[in-house]
Length: 460
Image (cartoon, rainbow, N blue to C red):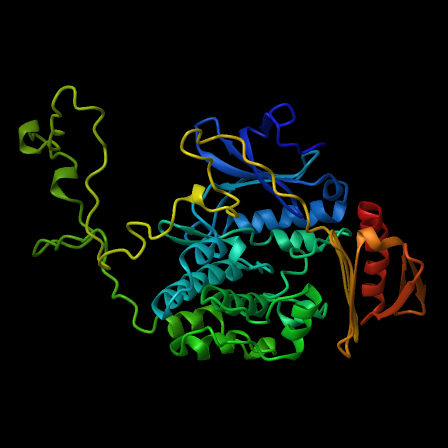
């Protein structure tokens, strides 16, 4: 199936949702803005054909969708519908308008300590909700955080785990995003909730205007996340210690999301009920039925039992009145998100959920190129990346080589021994470069040999 962006190729429906326009594309597939029959806006993610043919993806996708439904939408984009058994599996989440965190920082500049604490507490709440449902996000980054008018929302939790089970990996999704990648992820080890806390720390560094592990190539950032201390120079001193704890190399040394709430918001607002309970009448038990709703006694006349108050009359030609009472003042004081401090979504270029310009709010938006399909091989002493840009190799001694596809004639590989993968890149100029990757175990080597043919067929 082609995922074009012109009107002739645009899908009309996905499941029961009418497609309006394409929002973007990535390793999982294509994201569309669509509407339910009742008119509600949703973001529908349609899996790529390569993933649809992989039974491992479908199995994990189905399990993750069921778990994700229980997370709720307080700090996330709630899952509203999905069909893992469709010819192309799809997932629908509530449409959350607003810029991504990365776009917001680019537009407004770095956040100060107060906003970083607020952001950290909101993300900690979101991760706590996700982890309590047995999920691990695995790809928390500024591009997966929508700064909505009522606070940050975390997107795509659990889906990265479904992608990780496939034989076709996605650089920046299945393994996380370099720069926000926990050391255990970079080394191909077991990943749990502490990896999300590590990513949260890197997100806060980015929100402060810095980069925890610098810039440059993906392999360089992955190497630094494993072996070097993070750069916290941009982080305000008041929260620097908390961010440093999140970025601890050992998973067990990182604080839990619940502990982070105490660190980011040690003196939260006192709770006040939004619907005060009236005081009980003297001498009447608390569970007694209110007199106005009690069963009439024998011989009673209707006038003894008061009727509910009549609805207020609305003046003619005043439009349709709201059936809801005016919003009460918040017990927490003025909301920091009202009015929204963020620029309109349409003004942000990398917001995957941004609507079109005001002149045509549902106008077709140009699709983003799919550049995140790739091979990532992290060995015991070297690393190899093959993606849309070409081939990149990095050795433990700091040696780094990069070749664009325009330079490459062909790529060859062979397995030697139970854990060794030898890769040779032959250049059009006649030179050849050979590297050896040492896998940590045989299953990792087997995954590499399953991934490479697919990746080379995709790009070569």
